[in-house]
Length: 502
Image (tube, rainbow, N blue to C red; front, side, top):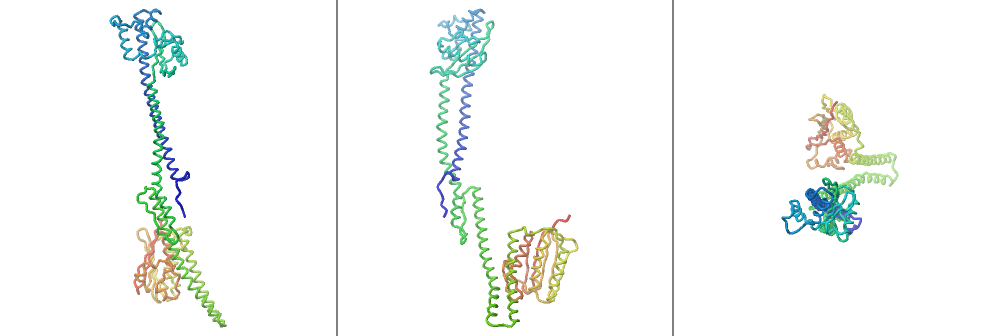
């Protein structure tokens, strides 16, 4: 008995859940990384733009002071000192020049009082620094500049003690004084705090989300696989004695519905096949039982006492006829099995029907002469060609002709007609025999079916001839139809597709 196991590492349910969580985890990590680095880029981009604007404004004010004070080196140093150290700052704003007034306004606008400012020579030698930039921190600023691409514009994050700073290094060319480097350092504590907070949120939220989605994924996996479990339970109930069980999955997904439908159709085919095998075996046993009983009975009677040579010959003849009948049944069964399950037995090739039925007509006349019957052959004048297996087509039509000869009275006529019709050809075999009742018409193509009239006829067959004929016709993409009236005869019509002529 099959037991439904709990989810294990090797189960589809576990693998689906893991795959779902892994894919979602990758998506979340990639998306979170994009968001984090986008935020980081925007924050530093805005900060760098602000630092660059501050540095250029410092350079412009120094340049303005220098033009006012003079072009000598002492005046330039005084201009730098006034800019970054605010050495002339006082309460009387009217004593300041326009450049000084502009700078004092910008100090508040740019919030420069909280920043660290230094001016270096291009080789990294300190020139002047703001008052809040102590010697130790100044040496650190010089080291930052010298560790970078000297003489070029760049930004750099540094940590000094407990301070996290972002430093801009801006080479600025002053008229008559050459190029100097303006350094401005500003705290990035708020930026780092914001980025760390966002990173913590990501690190904490992703595992929680994955834990929740793993639980949801298990539920979805169980729901998706539920029809599969139902199929398994249904398969447990199926035996060769009962194939009536079917899987019901009305609310399953489309793909699972296809699986359920295919499984149910397979069970239906198996049920039909088992029924066919059971019925077929029963009929075979019945058909072989009679000749075997006759053979045994005749042998027992012959052995009860001594018989004449003629009597022994009669017994042997009867047994031989019954053995031949059994052989005929077995041969027909083997041929039916090949026709239904092995289409490779057919060798299709062009068959010209006019010449084909002329030959059949001649052979039929020989058989009909024994019962003093007439054979009428109605063939078209034009050429008619089909793709078929000539050997099996002969078997098909001779089975129909044999039935017509067998069940028609002496002196009657048999008509064989060939008529093309709209891309197909209809071949009819008509007799003037006893006919078939309406009740028997739907059954005559069944295996081992015997009509009552056959019991009255001599040389009863195996009951497989018409089944063989229909199988051969269907293998040629054709069909057989029958029309009959009691005491007036029957007409069997075979319809086959025409082959294109080249």
